[in-house]
Picture 1: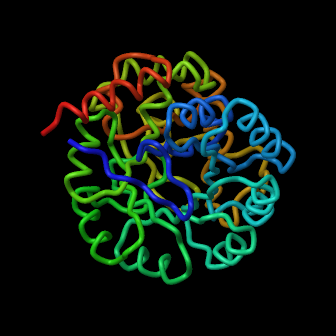
Picture 2: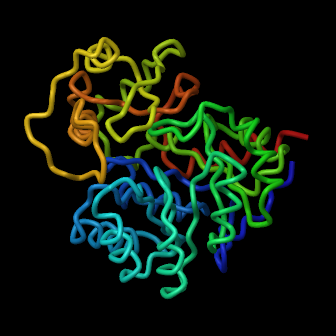
Picture 3: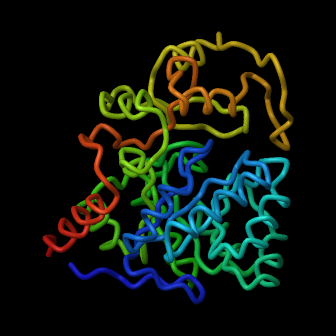
Length: 315
């Protein structure tokens, strides 16, 4: 099948593939730059980074790539505005934002001439984002990893969101190969966002233990958990998650006040950081629903080649 052309403001990636922003520090400069070099949109997860760290990541990605580099930032974090302004000062190409909704960010984007893309799960919110000035929206279904805005499938919400807006709609949730992307393109998506697939890339800097957990995953290992952010999340079953499902998780010893609102049932940022650095049984391993379909760790260029070949093979 023929690929759609994705347009986000003045941006025209060679391929309509966006690498999802994965916090905490799962998608950093090396991964984002590799995706941008392959012809997609590479995304740095800005959530919880300090302004100086975010600047370093953006500058490193620029040194490694001349392609399109964006950031993903959760509205739920306390330093949301500071992080967005930092990225805009560094002349980031595009900002993706979810886990809540900011109206102010569209004005900031206009002033800096940087397109803003809202992550949404309903036609109603997509229409509000378009009215506020979003250059595109990401329609994220329940198949996605990490924090979820809906329990409805991407195949259900995508037609609803496409009908609600005239701006481009990028579909996300459970897409791990070209065949999955093709099905979504046939439903009218202007682009796809893939996150879980890129964790199992050579360029993703998470620990080998984190990647091994993905490789060993079975469909039944993927579960929904409760996040202190106030949203459900999709993660892999492990020792920490078993405690969480029994409401017997360890309570936070320190509070970093990183979120605007937090249930304090456990420290989400500490749990995510533990997994990233290899302490997988003491943390959360966020993943998409179809993680078990991924069997290899490959360079980003090879991941793109296979995805594009699979799409081309579909009539």
